[in-house]
Length: 119
Image 1 (cartoon, helix red, strand yellow):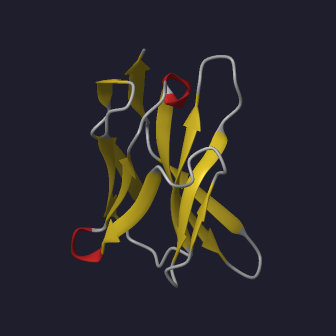
Image 2 (cartoon, rainbow, N blue to C red):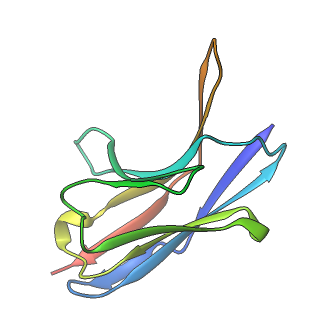
């Protein structure tokens, strides 16, 4: 029983910054990766950034150079620092954790936090 809870979303002007957080609780597995996805109205959910257990990162081209993913292991928390925000960044941001076994690929999701960038 794993629970991922996002926080830190809100309203920000274009060019501003925001940091969203994801805290894991319950039965904590050794996740192979954690990351952030986002979904704007009428659009499919898309990858924003991922952080593998070994420390490697992957970013969507649209956010490279502006967003940074990080973790604080002692608090079982992953962060997404968002700088130079644009109106097109407006979306619900979802925390994701993955656990891969020889037989299955498990995905865990948070409830999402709204990020709105005004122009």
